[in-house]
Picture 1 (cartoon, rainbow, N blue to C red):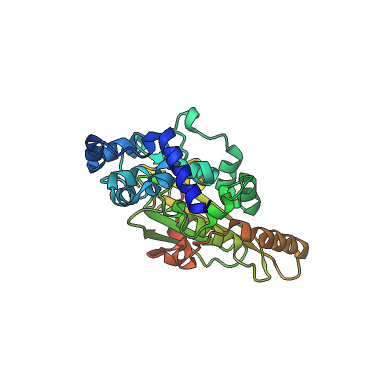
Picture 2 (cartoon, rainbow, N blue to C red; picture 1 turned 120 degrees about the horizontal axis):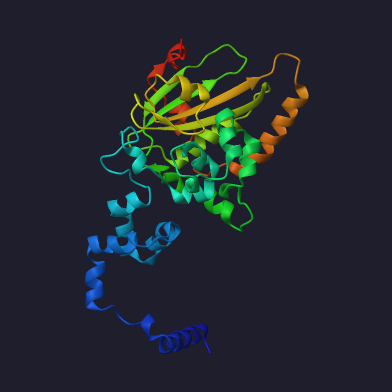
Length: 326
């Protein structure tokens, strides 16, 4: 018997045993799924982001078209920012939401910088050591401890899915409403001050791909023979600039003294350099860790032209960054 005949008989047997597989949908069902508003109500009732993101577009062409064009669905999945609300609104704390899918796969990198003292205890993650690290400096070792999905963890194929250049997480907003006013600063450690704060606007909000690429660039860029260590700090601000609520990871100098620059998120890179002829063993240790882990954490969509260090505008001088108390 030819293979095609065997397949035909197998399909016929399956159709007899499961007639619902070949039953045409009723006119009412067609009417419901052809009405965008009703289709949205059904999909938004599904409390399962991975299914909505990955499975719905694969059902058929019409479902994919709907998933690609429905603004309500894209807002619910953190692909499009909420309308008419920003992190600078006075009452934003009452409806600020983190992306649960990014919290699941990027853990403390998403949760810790966006947790505020006003949040109830049950919503605060048990990640105090990472809260502390993000306030005082998060390095490669801390990233390794987080066991992120992009590193593969213990699941077969997870690394490949997350490292793919078109992975959907790269296009996702970190929160609703998203951070649009970003403050970027690079501190050169014991070298002469060459920094300040760069404040720039991201009209559609900061997305995880841009944030992860900025983290990767800050920590894994080749050391050029002199750099000993690098770490990053991140913090969010809710409410108006005049009456801010800073996240727990904000440096104490910001929380107590204030920040003159009007931003909704700060991203700071601290780089420590060696003086001539010292710290050779430390440099070798850092180079080995950096080289060994770089391929593990690199995303296929990495774009050095889109990192925070590359698009900053409206430079603010270092002297005017903090409003120091006299």
